[in-house]
Image (tube, rainbow, N blue to C red; front, top):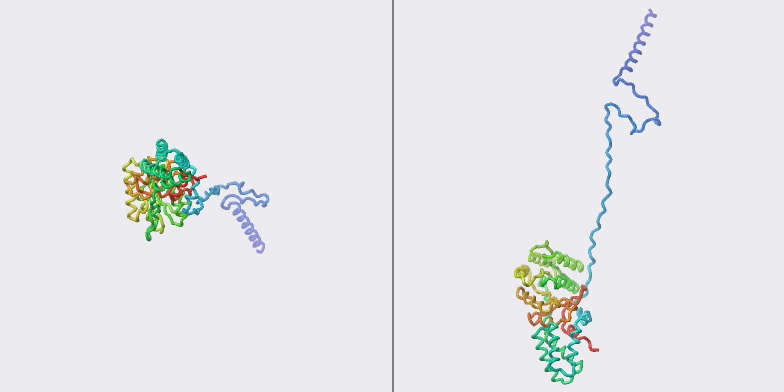
Length: 390
């Protein structure tokens, strides 16, 4: 019996071992696991074989472009401190003398002759007219000189110079040449700069702003010449150089609107003076001249227009006189700014323009430099005109 039981146990063990072997042989997947290789023999990841039914995702590689170079911010021009306006004409006297001395020397030479016959007097008269003194003032000067010469008899060069100086000063006249730039409480003074293109109008507006800043004034510039983008850019440059605010509009914008905005800006900023550069008007175009009148009317809704400066080119002579007369009919011109006075021997236009308009020459341009705009001083002008005795 015991032998029979032992045999049964042995058979059960054999059956279990056989069943375990079959399970290992036929387990799910139908394949035996691959043998494990030592680390040094394992394939690199990129060399691994793709197994059936397995999806291998590739990692996308993104190339990051180098950062774009950042443009440096625009460099603002350094704010300059201009010199004050006082004494400018004295400092520029030598420059004026070089250009005007031909007229002075010519008159002195003629009047110093021993015998002043009719022919000499005609030459004196012609010299004055060629210098744009004007027919009326020339005749008045020649008549006075004739009388004085008869009284003096013989004349030294110093006496002749004294005679000419006296007559020129009399013809230039003793007029109030002060710029009306006093503010009215919280409202700034407003200066309109008018004139034909090419006379130096925008440059004069910029130089005037520079001069006033040099005198300690706070200035706002209005670029109401909206028909020329270059004019607004030019005025912007003048303003940036001295720290003056510039109000401008789009190209072709309504000039009166820009002038109004500039005046409002001047009030808001508590400025002392607002200078408005208007478009250069061709004096033959009535429509444009009417528009200039509109600019003045619109500005006066916010503040008083204290000064209307008419810019004239001294080299244009009598043509400049005609321009002045037409402008005076449109706006109440209160002062003349004569530019390019250093480049002409026809400085007599100072006399003729004042005589025709009854308006004083208040400013003169004596060069291309930023500080070459000076308050007009008759005595300095005449002394430069006649030159120094030597």
